[in-house]
Image 1 (tube, rainbow, N blue to C red):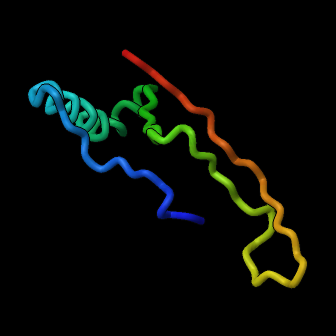
Image 2 (cartoon, rainbow, N blue to C red):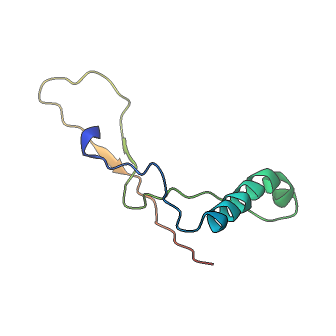
Length: 85
């Protein structure tokens, strides 16, 4: 792993503060209503913004590597979803 090569997104610079605050309220409202919405048949999902990153997992459990042992990986990549209202 090379964490020093990862770019992080920390803070969004909102162009319009009022619009940004309303969007935050809308998202928070969905989180608070998620259980009620689920009971009425509506699904609320949250999606990671870094769609270009693949989730990789080893096939075998972690253990100390033996000399000349190869590691095998299973690609558990996620599909990027985009939605624009």
